[in-house]
Structures are given as structure tokens and as C-alpha cells.
Length: 244
Image (cartoon, helix red, strand yellow):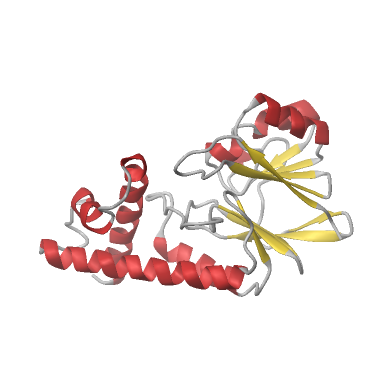
């Protein structure tokens, strides 16, 4: 059985929980090198990976990626060509050998357009920010979007009871169970946005993102206001497109 090591990169915050999870698979593939923290990068350089994969382009997952690739001669790959160094972009459904298994790349857009999950068959799925260890993810409008996110949750649910290895937070026992919870939460938020539109007497096309955020995310801390507005904007865009 291929070994999967989780290494916590020290960048705690309201969006990163305790920090970013970097994974080393089979002692030769690094997933999400994380921030350019000197001690963290030195630990990854010592691995001498042959391949570096990123689940999406956000800097809390990728800041150290290019330098790690240059320092070790590893190939860096992500779904977005701009996140690659010395290698081709990842392809949906692609299989990547490591040890005695093959990893499968699944495109799971929604949080960002370039989000991927990495399946270790029969064992686990690395979900980046598509599914977190606790709480829910942000749909980063306009790069992210609700419709593809819901489709990504369907795709992850179909994997069954594989363990979730998230980009932030602790592992979870069943990707199918969490995908169902995430879908229910997202649909509940959409209902809350619909209620906010009725209260404001406006439509999704004409609504103020700030006013909707005040009503739907009124209890959110100021430190995550930008994220709340991004999610509200994504929900308004979805409703405008699907319920016009």
C-alpha cells in the first residue's frame, strides 16, 4: 500500500484553518507544497520529489511550488498551464503511477475553475479546497461558480466511502457523506439568498452583493467578509442564470 504523509504548512488563518496540508505520496509525489516557509520548503526539498501536483492555483497551496521544482528538478503540474513548470497541464481522468498504484486526476471545479481532486483508488481522495476538514468552502466568484461546484460534489459522492484528505483541516472518513452535507448546505444558502431577494424586493440580476451578504452572512466575522461576498456573488450569478 502506498504511503501518504500529511505535513502541515504553518500559515494559520480564518481561511486556512491551522494551515495548509501538504501531502507526500509514495515518497515521490508532493501535493500542494503550500506557502514559501523556509523550514517547510527545506523539509520538502529533502523528499527529492519527482513530481509536484497542485490542486488549484491559490497561493496558500502553490507559493512554494515553482521554487521546489527548480530546487529538486521535479516536474510541476496543475490543471492551469500557468501553474506548471517543466510539465504538461493535468488532464481530467488522467492516471499517474506511483509505487504499486495509480493516482487518478478528477477535475472538480467550483471553488476555482482549475480545482482538481486526486484519487488514491480504494483508499482516499485529496480534495484541495473543494472539501475542507471542517466548515465549508468558498465559491470564489467569478473564477469559481455554483453549477460546476454542485456537479463536482456529485462526482465526489460517487467515489463512495473513500477517506477525505483535505487541503485544510483534519481527514474525514467518507467523501460521499461529506459531499451530501456540502450539497445540502449549498442548497440551503441558495434558499437564504432567495429569501434575501424577496426581503430586498429585487432580483438576482439587480441585487447589491453587499446587501445580500449582510442578510445571508450577517454573523460572519469581518476577517472573512471578502469570502462571504464572493460566495454571495456566486449564488446571485447562479440564480440569475437558472431562474431568470
